[in-house]
Image 1 (cartoon, rainbow, N blue to C red):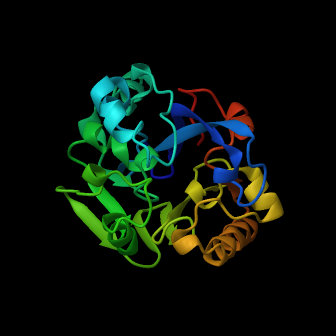
Image 2: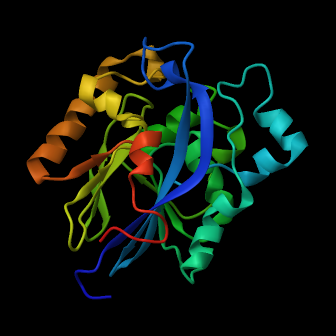
Length: 261
């Protein structure tokens, strides 16, 4: 790779059918949507990163684990539809890579559909906002899975904006969760990209400034401020702003293994 060569791959790790009001606060209750669960692989001259890692496949594939984690009465969301070939190591193998080739994982937050797949990435540094770890260990809501918020590995806790490597900047977008972050990626040829994470599940959240259905402490105001921050950052930098669970937006993305660069 040249010093300017940065590549980005969206990875579809599962599909999740749930009530739309979980993504759009106070809107469309009773309407089911199919939401992609995405992770992102970023290759830079300084190393390879993942932004989010999807679900723990074992909790979906094993009937006993599925019953314990997804089918209990207090479960917030139904079980996602995840296939073995959608595990991140399977995508890496198609690029000639192994999980040990990943240098770092940036977690936008610790909900199960973003953090569970860490079990498949054993050696990477994990970057996380300190407030997110605190909220997850309460737990602040029931979308955190208890065994996934204990991170006995190379954990890097942050507060404020930081850059884990050249061309990648992580910035605070709280509201959906206490320590939610989004990621700005400078590509080598195309426009920069802002990965919104669950600060914006759908383009509708951005276009209409609709907070997510689940907000930390049930307060939508920080989430609305983060939506505006995302839009301002994209506008000021000329970046594309990517929502995280929008099936129509995902269908317009480049098919794997074609990268953005």
